[in-house]
Image (cartoon, rainbow, N blue to C red; front, top):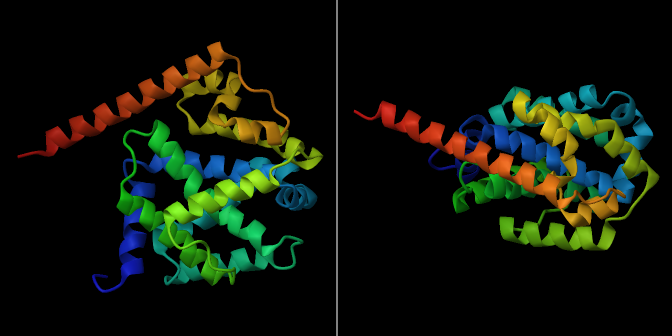
Length: 249
């Protein structure tokens, strides 16, 4: 592993996904997937299959299982290789351009980092950002996609520019959002679920909300949800510090 930069990067990303940042990374992956609803071409493909609007929980679970198989095992492991084969099979023949597929990878890479940096128990490190980028760059290569921009910062800038050019309101995007909105509350502690359900839109930026035809939250709702998220992050960080203290000799 010491001589394999990708293996090192994968180990760091796996530690993010299965360690102290795991819950936030999983939620960030969800938020990244939601962002694809605002790209008209992607929204048409997702809505056209019918699975996201009729069986959203099953579709989300299947997608998550593939991603986490790759996170846990890596693409060199037989299970990881099978996951890549499945992804290629699922995407073969879909009426989507290479840039749209690259955008999906960018959303999965960048959105979780943004979420963790804003609301996690601690910000991500430069090494973690680089490792996330390496993971999705490798996945894109194995899916025979064009190379993604060469660093996390470059990918972040590319994603921002892509959204400015392509985000737009479509009937498909709105239908996908309506069908899947309840999935978000499953990612929060039960005590926060009613508040998050009422203030789901606070989890998204104005650009995304406009692109799916959603109204921005009122300031009291936004303030309540943001305060709850700060308390959640503080409690998580305190728990980590307590655990570290208890394991010291």
